[in-house]
Image 1: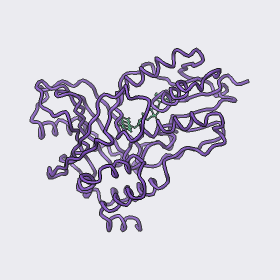
Image 2: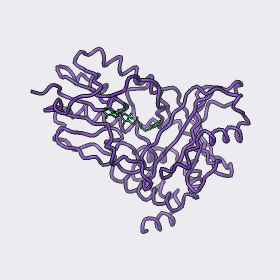
Image 3: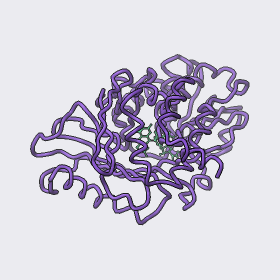
Image 4: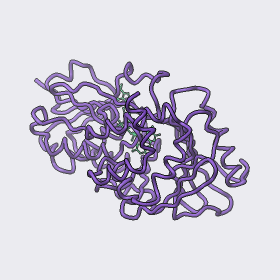
Amino acid sequence: MKEFDYIIIGGGCAGLSLAYELEVHKKLKNKKLAIIDPRTNYKRDKTWSYWKVIDHNFEDCVKKSWSRFHVTDTSRKNNESDCSYYPYQSIDSEKFYKKILKKLKKNKNIFFKKKMNKSQFKGSIIFNSVPSIKKFNRDRVNYWQHFYGIEIELKKQTYGLDKFDLMNFDCDQRNAVHFIYILPFKKNRMLIETTWFSKYDKKLFDYQKQIDQWIWDWMRLKKTDYKIKYREKGAIPLFPIHQKNKKNFINIGTAGGMTRVSTGYTFLNIQEHSKYIRMNIDNINEVERFQIKKKYFFFDKIFMKVLDRYPEIMPKLFLNLFGIFNNSIIKFLSNKSNLIDDIIVIFKMPKWTFVKSLFN
Ligand SMILES: Cc1cc2nc3c(=O)[nH]c(=O)nc-3n(C[C@H](O)[C@H](O)[C@H](O)COP(=O)(O)OP(=O)(O)OC[C@H]3O[C@@H](n4cnc5c(N)ncnc54)[C@H](O)[C@@H]3O)c2cc1C
C-alpha cells in the first residue's frame, strides 16, 4: 500500500511552487503529499528576477518592478532600454516561502519531512528537484553563471529608483565574461551582484573585492558609507541538465532542465512547469514531459560556443542587443519568441562570428 500519493523531493522554489499550484487548484483533495527537505528554516536566500512575460501565482511577493534598464560596456558606453511591456520583477524568496508554507500548513494531508526511506516511496508519484551530484559537479569543463551579491543601505539617498542595471561590464574581465548587476529597491537600498559567465575557476572568487572596487569606481563610496543588509551567493549551470524522467518519477526545477542555458533564468519556467503538471496530474505518466523548446537549446549551444571562443566580444554584443526591438529580445530570452523575434535576435548578433562558431 502506498503511504503518499505524491512525494516532492526538495522543498525549494520548484518543489514549493508545485505544491502550491496543486493545493490552490484543489488537486490535493483526498490525496496525501509529502515534501522532503532537510532545511530547518526558510529565510531569504535568493532574489528571483525575470521579465514578466506570463502571469504567475506570486505577484504579491514582488519586491519591485522596473520598466527601464541599462546595459553598459567596458568603456562606459551605455544603452537605456524600455521594458514597460514586460516589466522586470524581483521576488523576495522569504515572502515566497512564507506565503506558500502558510497555505500548505492548513492542509492536514500535506506532510513536511526532513528525510524518508526509499521504501516509503513505493507506489507514489515522485517529483524530484534535487540535482544528482555527479552530473551537477562543479568541474572545470562546463560554464556556470556564478555570482555573489550584497544588498546595501546607503547613508545618503544617491541612487535612481526607476531603472536597474542589467549588465555593467565596466569591471575587471580577466579573459572571462564579467558584469555587475544592480537592482535598486529603494533610493538608499540596492542589491549589487558581481556575476561571471565562466568555468568554475576559484581565481574569480574574490567577489567582495570586486564589489568594493565597483562601488568605489562608480559611486565613490567607502565601506563606512553603507551597511550590508543581506548577502546571496550562487552558481547556476549554463549547460543542459538532462536527468532522466521515469514512470512515476519526474524531475522539476533546475534538476528538471528548467534553467535556460544562456541566461540562467529559471523562475518563470518553474512556474510554467508547475502549471503543466497541475493540468495533467491525473494522467502525468501518459502526457509528454514539459521542457524548454528545443530551438532554444540550439541557439544557446551556439551562443555558449561564441562565449567560449570570444569572451571579449560579449560586452559589445549585449550593448547592441538592446535598445530597439526590446520586446522581441526579452521574449527570446524568456523562451517566448516567435519566428520574427528570432530573426530580429539573429540580425542583432555578429553573424560571421556565430557562423564560424557553429561549424567549429
Ligand atoms: C542565489 C540565487 C539566485 C538566483 N536568482 C535567479 C533569478 O534572479 N532568476 C531566475 O530565474 N533564476 C534564479 N536563480 C536560479 C533558480 O531560479 C534557483 O536556483 C531556484 O531556486 C531553482 O529552484 P529549485 O527548486 O530547482 O532549487 P532550490 O530552490 O535550490 O531547491 C532545492 C531544494 O532541495 C533541498 N535539498 C537539497 N538536498 C536535498 C536532499 N538530499 N533531499 C531533499 N531535499 C534536498 C534544498 O534544501 C532546497 O530547498 C537563482 C539561483 C540562486 C542560487
